Image (cartoon, rainbow over all chains, first blue to last red):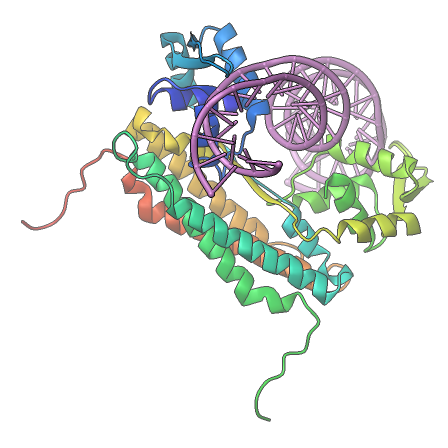
Amino acid sequence: MDVKTVCLGMLTDGPASGYDMKKCFESTFGHFFPAGYGSIYPALATLARDGLVELEEIPQEGKPDRKVYSITSNGRDALDKALTNPNPTHRVRSEFLAMMCFAHLMSDEQINEVIDNKIHELNELMQIINELPTDVDGPMPKGTRFVAGFGHFVAASLTSYINDNRDMLTNEEKSHSGC
Amino acid sequence: MDVKTVCLGMLTDGPASGYDMKKCFESTFGHFFPAGYGSIYPALATLARDGLVELEEIPQEGKPDRKVYSITSNGRDALDKALTNPNPTHRVRSEFLAMMCFAHLMSDEQINEVIDNKIHELNELMQIINELPTDVDGPMPKGTRFVAGFGHFVAASLTSYINDNRDMLTNEEKSHSGC
DNA sequence: TGCAGCATGTAATTTGTTACATGATTAA
DNA sequence: TTAATCATGTAACAAATTACATGCTGCA
């Protein structure tokens, strides 16, 4: 399940250009499967070469031809086969957590800055997920809703864990009232 | 913050071999920064070449020489600089979620198998985190505890989200009592 | 005047994964 | 006898990121 497979999946919803798919990678797939043009265009070229997608080139004025891709029946077979994998991965690669492992080598200011930034980022992510287009060409498919909910739930969980435990990382003495 | 930097960080705790570090990548860092020998050994070679670590070769019978690495003061500078980054990443790459986006192209059996496997995997992860060594050479540093708690909390959150929402993905009609 | 959006791609680089290659010791 | 642990590494491959390269339209 790489960028190529995800592109195939997107095309089951109707023909699209690389540019269209990029927007989809930014919105629905943004929080768990990022991909830029540098991945998408080569992926589409390979899929076309292998006969898994067809393309129609639509001439435009002042812009490169718009290449609209459709999935072929071979492509559909390849997708179905990919969806057969009973153990799809879910990988995290976190510089953030690695850095927090070495919090004892950092100043409180540094730690607090990193944490504030991370919380801010998570808030933005939740907002992006909340603003996902709901009704473009019919209702959001059930899988998409599940995944959006997932992203929102995880971001909310992370935020609360970080808020509840950030004091564990710094050296500051909390002043407590009384006594 | 790549494998090299994490290796440097590990060495602030004392000298270690590539083999030792691999164990650390499997335990403490396992859930958010996986790395195999194929990443670790080249990383250490590069660090040594650049003078960020020193090594002592300890001859052994019937085994390759044990190479014990220590961080140098240049290495410490490089690490401190890396810890300066105010926006460390936290990236997710999920075939699982991508697949769930296309749940409408899958059979209920397929979906259920994938979900059961994922829940099982998450349970195993939580167990691994709970069994992390606590008192090897002094107490677990605060960052390590924060990160272990983080992993456990996230895994628990994911499990409960999946359990609460898996019905959304399948086509089964739930039989409800009464009426 | 400048920026965002539309629209495509290539090339170099970085990074990591997987498989290969070796081989002794020890516990089940 | 079989697997796990100790212990190192290389080479081929796969994949993604980043920078480069082009250029019009429409809005503020």
